[in-house]
Image (cartoon, rainbow, N blue to C red; front, side, top):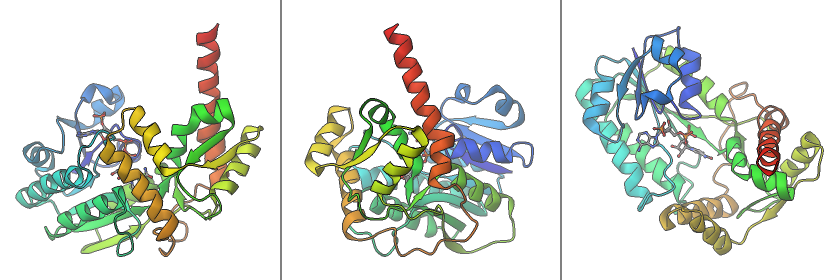
Length: 301
Ligand SMILES: NC(=O)c1ccc[n+]([C@@H]2O[C@H](COP(=O)([O-])OP(=O)(O)OC[C@H]3O[C@@H](n4cnc5c(N)ncnc54)[C@H](OP(=O)(O)O)[C@@H]3O)[C@@H](O)[C@H]2O)c1
């Protein structure tokens, strides 16, 4: 039995797609109605949040392996405490149920990142789980390509995207589908033990300026990257309902990327993550921009 948290999330649902019909699955979902009917028909479902140790223990009871991550929360009042709450609940549930293996999603930057907002919080959460002694593979990811989807409207309307990062520094990235593929492989493999970080890093080494060039080519229109002033970026985030703590965490993460080279030293595992940026733009960004423009034309007409 494999227990999967966040089965409706962008990584979790792809892990489910890869394992459904291959292994016995138990999915922990806050709202099971958000799972496709075909998934509900083939997997056991427990309703609730893995923030609650009792609910997670129920979902993990009798399971051999668990897929686990901390759900993003743009409204978190205290970032470190938010990540630690999930991690402590997980540690309690893993100890009481005797789960053997945990595959969790975290970040690159262990031993390098300091005062790095979300990165620091995620790395501390890994340590809480590691202290249980459970066999653990931590998928250490750089910047998700799917983060660029937050800029779909800006790209469509203004031909630009903006982040408080340097445009001329390489930014390592990963497609979430590639993280899910590595997770599914590890969840099916019962030969590993102990604790290890597994870097999951895409094949490109592009700067944000170079990514803008690739977007321009794929979308067939000019797209440019505009570095953002950190304070203005924070003001824009909080105006859109992001908590001050979460906005500060994102700014700190970007600063760490600019100044500490947090993603740069990790060794890429050959063939582990294969989606290149141009391919992702063709398969994911281009349809998202087209859908945005269709919706806009529909609501204008
Ligand atoms: N973005 C990056 O660049 C980056 C880089 C490295 C690591 N990471 C890490 O990657 C993870 C994000 O994974 P993702 O992109 O797959 O997330 P996602 O697509 O945002 O999915 C979030 C999932 O969590 C569930 N969820 C939300 N709030 C919850 C709560 N309070 N209790 C229980 N479930 C809850 C959601 O389910 P429902 O809403 O359906 O209930 C959904 O299934 C985070 O841990 C982040 O730190 C991100």
